[in-house]
Image (cartoon, rainbow, N blue to C red; front, side):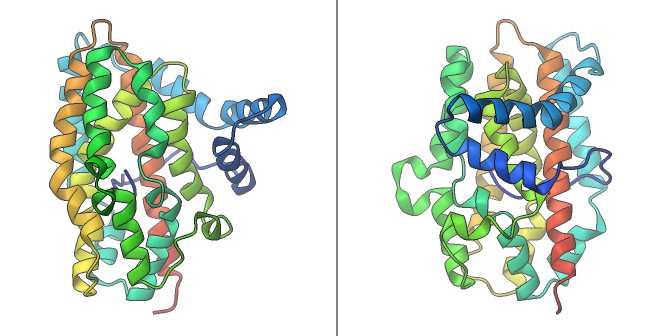
Length: 285
């Protein structure tokens, strides 16, 4: 998982930084009754209204195949209209500006895919196994050196940045927290795991164009450990196919929820990406 696909404009804004930071803290611990109430309260103000709105406005798809066709169209539209910010990152960002972008996604990169594991037992068996095949890759197939989180650690080390998660809690933006919190909610908190299926089908497909600017920037800047980005460009087409399978094999797909997951993720990931690059541009060259 990690920084990726952008969209041209976003009508939905991330909630206040304090609320997102608190939600992230709650997701990282076993909640007591008070914690659970606080967690639910933040979700009710932030992500649940968005999910419900996208579900209510979802097209009346006649089949999973129709939904996947609409997903392909959305991806093509996004790829054709990538914001200028991606050109800036790919062609103009300095090493210091690139470090700002890397910093913004460190909360995700250092723990990549760990928050997704709870979704597997919540899914029907065949769908869950398709998702699990993706997560096995994300975790390096048991090889610590190949796990995506280790690739991010290698990148951080080369850039002279901390490997401690807590060191990024005071520097990450609200949109950056929302990016990480979204995956926690999709995998373990959403009432239906079918939101996750749409979300991750979108995510794994959109990385194929969304990460291009990150990979190009790393190569241009002579960063040796840019493998975090190139690995995603290599493996995520395979992951995209598995996520489509996870949707196709459902006996009773809730197509509105799946589509809501697609749109929700497009918004939140795009917002986080745009915010990270905007913060980088504010950094002196």
